[in-house]
Image (cartoon, rainbow, N blue to C red; front, side, top):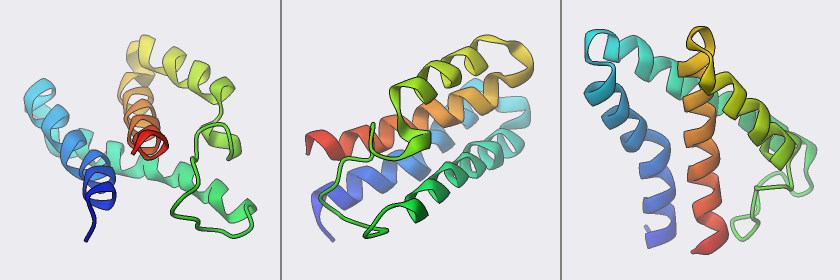
Length: 102
């Protein structure tokens, strides 16, 4: 297992777990499940050819990983009703952005 892979998937699974546990302690399990559910935005990878390219930067390549989507995710994170969803989506983009720099 290489370093990039380890960092990427740590940010997809472990980082959201820590955020859920330390910042949403009362409902951390529910919050963590919502964070994990935000990985559904990776369905936009099915539109790419090839579907998976380990050397591709997802940011601004896939439709749900664009800067426009980033603005929507920030707006979701601002409002209390959608905050957890927005935070999960932003953490997902952060995890994918790490691939662009490693």
